[in-house]
Amino acid sequence: MSILKRPLLAVVALLLSISAFAETEVPQDSREFFVDESKLPFESILGLPSQTAWGVLEGAGYQIEIPDNWNGDLVMYTHGFRGEGEELTVDAPPLRAWFMANGYAWAASSYSKNYYDVKAGIESTNALARYFTQEYGEPNRTFITGFSMGGHVIGAAIEMFPNIKCPRGKGGATCRRIADVLGKLSGGVAYDGAVPMCGVMGDEALFDYFGDFGLAAEANAGITSVYPPPEDYAVTVLPQLIAALFTDFGAGFPVFLTEAGERQKALTKQLSGGERPVFDEAYPAFQGLLFSFTGSTSDLSGVLPGDNYDNTDRLYQLDASRGLTREERALNRAILRLEADPNANPDKLIGLERLPIITGRLAIPVVSVHTLGDLFVPFSMQQIYAREAKANGREGLLVSRATRAIGHCEFSGDELVTSFADMVNWVNTGERPAGDDILDRANVADPNFGCQFSEGEVASRLGIPACSSEDAI
Image (cartoon, rainbow, N blue to C red):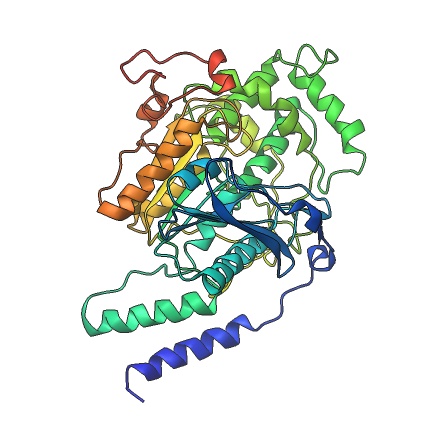
C-alpha cells in the first residue's frame, strides 16, 4: 500500500466512525407516505418522440424521459414544498418541452417524504440520478434545476461532491481522491451545473425570517410574546395582532397600516433584502401568508428534534442605516429573545444534517435567480448565498440574477430558458454569464434594478413600475 493511500483510508475510517453516531428520533422518522402508482404514467409530447419511464425507487415515485435525439446530458429536476400530506407526487419540469426539443433527458423524484424534509429530497434525487446511470448509461453531464425548497435541495446536493479546493501537485492529487471518496461516501452525485430558481439558498435563515416577522409583529403591536405560543394563538393572539397593525381590520384581509404596521413593513423590507423595487407592491400580497406562520414553533413540524430558531444576537433595524434610531432601540428591547436547542440541527462532518446546511463552497457553475417581490422565500436568500460564496472564495462560480415580479417562483418561460441555457453555455465554454450585483445596496435600490434579466410576461408585472431604461421589460 502506498504512503499516500494510508492517510486517505485513515481519514475515511475516522469520518465513517463519526457519521455512525445515532441521531435523535423525530416524528418525521415514523411518518408513512405513499405513491399512487396509477398517477405516474405519462406520454411523450406530440411531435417530440421520447422514451418514458416511471416507477417507485426507495420509497419515492419517479418519472424519466429520454428524447429520441438525446444529446447525452441529463437534467435532474427538484420540486418545491409539497405540504404535509401522506401522498407523494411527481411532476415534470416546466421546461420539459424545451428539454425534449433540445435533446436533454430529465428525471424527477417525488422525494420519499413530504414536509420540509430537504434531506429526503437530496437522497431521493441522488438515488434517482444513480438509477438513471445504471439503467440507461452514464450521462455526459448531469445538471440540476428546481424551485423553492428544490433550490435548497440543489444548494446542499452540489456541495456534497466535491466541495473542497485542492492544491496543485502530489498533494492536490491526494486531496482530489479524498474529495472523491467523501462525495461517494456521503451519497453525493457529481453534478456539472445548477440553476436554482427562487431557492431557499439561506437554509435555516428562511425560518429565522418567519420567526423574526412574527415576534417583531408582536413587539411592534405592543403584545407580550409568549413561547411556546398558546395552542389557541390563531383565535386569541392573532386577531389582536392584526387589529393593532392594520386600520381596516375586519374587512377581508387588511391592507391599510397603522403606525405600528408601518414599522412592521419597514422591518420586513430590511429582513427580506433591503430597499429595492417591487417591495411596496408585493407587501400587501403576502400578509396572509406571513401571518399564517406566526404562533408556530421552529422544529419544522417534527422534522427536527427541537426548536431551531435563535435571535439572541440579532439586531433589528427599520432602515438601511447602521446606527439605531429611538424606534429601533425600542424594538430591540421589546422583542422576545429565544435561543435554539443546540441539538436541533447539529453540523455534520459527513452526510446531511436534518435540515441540510448550504455553505457556499461551490465547485460547479451555478446560476441562481429570484424575483424581487417574493416575500415567502425572500430575495435575502440570494444575498446570503452570494455572501457565503464570496467568503469561501467561490464567487466566480455563482451568478445571481433578479427579476421584477411579485409572486413566489413567478418566472416567464423566457426567463427559465435563458437561465438554463446560460448555465449550460458556461459549462461548455468556461465563459461566465452576466449577473446582478445583489450585494451592493445602492445597486439593488436603483429603480431599474431587476430589469436586465426580466423578459417575457407574468401576471404580476402588470402591477409594478415599468423600467425606464433600455433594459425595460
